[in-house]
Image 1 (cartoon, rainbow, N blue to C red):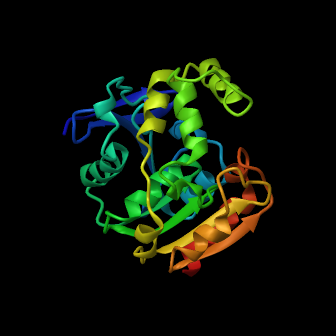
Image 2 (spheres, rainbow, N blue to C red):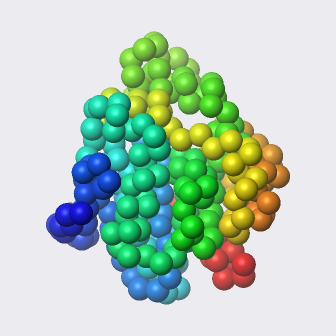
Image 3 (tube, rainbow, N blue to C red):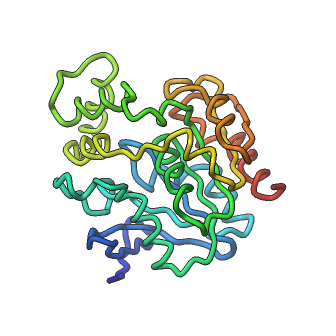
Length: 256
């Protein structure tokens, strides 16, 4: 794999070529136990930058690694469907851990990042603990109507509606790659309840009390045998930025 580093917005951004030669961007700060943060949809790794969680992880002696998933941010944004099939994002994260020679690591996902994390937990043996944030049980359904609606909207197969119009307009306003986002929804990983039931990692499920758009986090908790659930005040777009989210995550990392 080829690795280069460049300075971007006063931060060192590194790149490596993943399993299929797709270039993946990431930042790597701090020393100590490695923690990978996985961003959500219509987002990139910079969404973690001003969060209490990132600040407190670094202050408490963790090494914080934040990738831009393929199709997002400074990573390559291929427009070929083959680049997103067969859990390509999962392979990217495992390739990143290989590239950094991580023997074990913690993973924290939020929103769509938690969907990626759920599948990663079924194949990656190096994860010590995991945090699934901002997600309920609905992603386990391969025919999840919400995923299909966004896939159709971003791919131009369906007119925008009350559910999708705001998301598409926001993506355009930040110059996100609309085509890549559609492909990410088309080939989003699906983890079945049966697969979840075999995951033995210690897991924190954390969700805002006003966040139910992606299903029931209580139901998700029942399918992960070594998990516990924390509900904090907040909605889907803001919970991961807040101090109550950081406090619960740091407490889990220390006490479990």
